[in-house]
Image 1: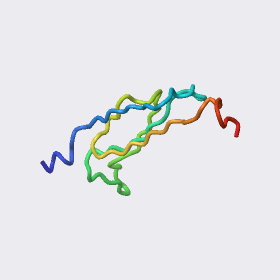
Image 2: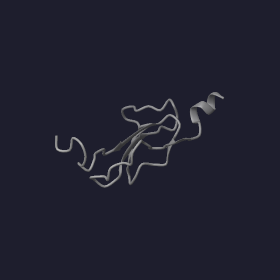
Image 3: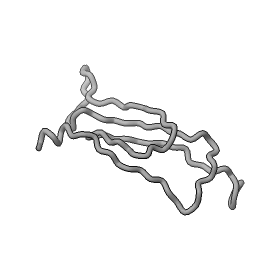
Image 4: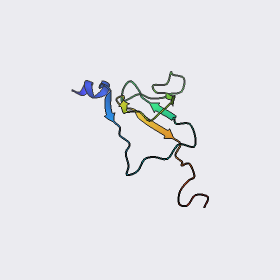
Length: 93
């Protein structure tokens, strides 16, 4: 069991975006960015003079994913622009 904890399989987390009202039309094209650090083992390290045990991977996203695939021991940061069309109460304030 200990070795499995260091090399586990990817997990999947379902994602659902919902709310009380329909979202406004986007001002900017839908999409975003994903930055992920996913080492092969939990004890990966970065040492001077050696190949890094983990690197940051960057990926362009065209939409919000239906599910988030989370490799073991990973950190994922998703970034999406949030805004409105400028219509409605408070527009221009």
